[in-house]
Image (cartoon, rainbow, N blue to C red; front, side, top):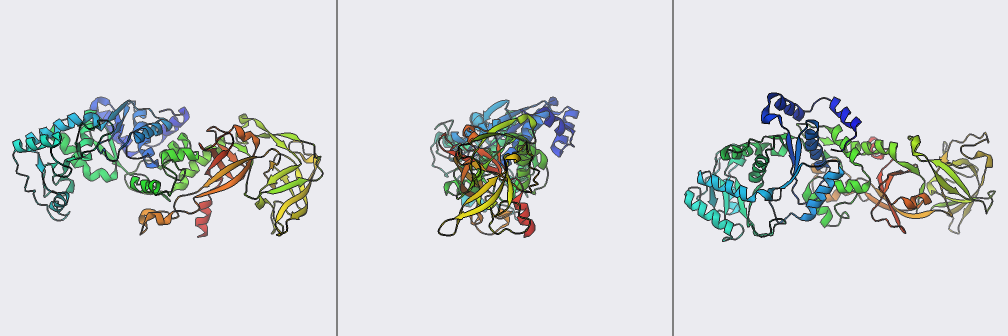
Length: 565
């Protein structure tokens, strides 16, 4: 893991989570020869999201802390939903988070070996070919309070089962005609023990093995055996796999292979979003978002495009910890992590975000005069230096920074009022110019020459400071103001279709007039638009057309709305 030494040191000083305690106990007892070997096993059927980031940080973090190794293993046992595009995106996301895997494996690497494992179970009378339909098998399962019924095909001989399974492999039967089931216990209180399906027929092209196979192992059969083949010491899964663990152990025991062990932790549930791949795919396919990397999506690629950093995501995962019980994490914590980092690292620049900005004309400023002001990039980091910002007789300000009839304690611009232009001069509003419709179109002001920032000798105390952009030098940009995708805190607790709660204001596009220094911002460096929030350049940007994405607001505006409610 590529991680700052201070970050690693701080993490090591914190109390152990329950999985770290298990690992330390295993190391102390000499279990697995004192090795720690984890794996991250995504299915390549979609893009990774913030929940996967938690699992990535846990698996790679454990191996890093205890001098072990982590495999990246793709669970590619369902050719219908999987694609090389997803494989490449997953690898890019893991590396972006700052991790590198020891080995890259695929469940499909083990198809021959898994097939041999299945034949071994058949030969030992522990598996049989079933001709029942999926509906019949579901009915045979019974209920959690009632035992299931044995399949009429359960008594087939070993020889018959081997013959049928080999013919399944040879492609003699259509999809759904037969399955291979483990023979365990149809009366078991654990529903997963009631003769689970371990192989099904699926005539589909596989992204790696092509058309070699037309039968594919089920997750429960491929998972534990893949762990065993790779001699994984600590197989980490989320809590929904607790009922699967006895089956995981049963297969390993009956096959007499390496005794990998499964441990479960709470998955990440985040407010105002959904984490289900199925639901995320709906959002993409139905056009509610603009692809998997839409900055409103909880995908790692979406977070990256929005301007989140690897370190902020790792910090978030570290802060939420590893728990044994499900809980709902406030997305505000994720926003806090990136806000705290960008406050220290982002350069401050000026941008007027307004479709109808106000022009301020400094009537006593010479028409042919042009200054270059030097403004510090980041008051939190003196080493960030300064930049040059042009200043002229006419500047743009945002319409909300002027009010013709202001209330008390309004410290921005109004008729007769004074305000400081950030990094420049104190100005006074002398005249308001309106069009025929009565709209304010221009403010005529005077500036105080001796009030220049850094060398102010005017002695005037000004309470308000506003940002601006020189009219002559302003660069047009599209600014995308992203907000939370859903309007309800816990979509899973709501009745109806989750898409009914899509926030109509989750994306607002506004015109931006920005400093000319941002012409060179076609990079991944974060910036703060003064008084507006933190932004990053979007990949849609070109030299002729800049596009910026809002990463996060300066303050948690949602927290204020919650308090009001």
